[in-house]
Length: 124
Image (cartoon, rainbow, N blue to C red; front, side, top):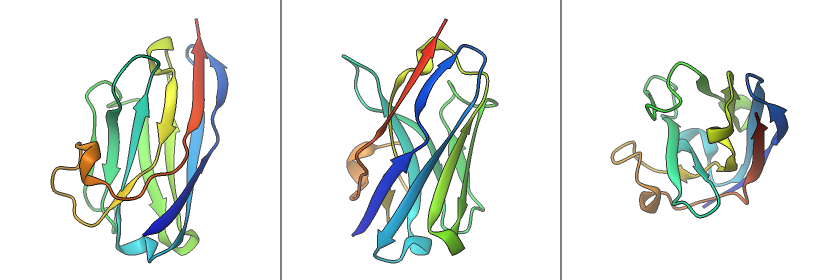
C-alpha cells in the first residue's frame, strides 16, 4: 500500500481559496488512481474528485465542479486539490485515498489506502 499524508487545510472565509496537498510514500504512487473525499460532522464520507495516474482522466462531484481542481505531480509523489470560491458547505475533513483502477471511483469502499485527513473550515 501507499502511505498518504494530507496537508493544507485551515480556516477561511466564504469566497476564499485553499490548496490541499497529499504526499505519498511507499508503494509506487504514479501507478495509483488518486481521489479526494470529504466528511462533514454527522454526514457520510462523500466523493470530491479523482484522477488517473497520467492525469488524463479526471472526475468531480457536481457540488465542486468549476470550483475545485485536482492535479498530481508524479515526480514529487504528490497530488493537490485547489479549492476556490469556498462556501460553508465545503467545511469538512478532507481525505486523499488511493486505488488501483479508475472504475467505481466515487465509491469510498473501493479505495485501499487513506490518509489521516486535513480539516477545512469555511466561515460565512
